[in-house]
Length: 111
Image (cartoon, rainbow, N blue to C red; front, top):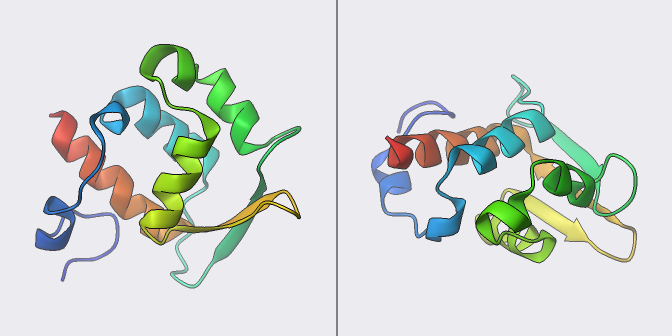
């Protein structure tokens, strides 16, 4: 298997809804989630409020341009195993290197 951030046979088989296959969503993920070099890094981001997933999604106009809302984003990240949602505590815990692989796969499908 190739290093994180690269497309693999496994990622080619992923089912990613078409609305996520666009540059706006890739840019959202790329800037919203700092891609750490340490594979074990787990980072947190608020779900709603200042600096949150919701605020960034709104800034990128994902709902308006692509019909992607907060629940769509959380569901995709959680289903792929890239984030754990803690709604009561209002944060997600994400694995940056795994998300780098998702970004690479979406970029490959855009081209």
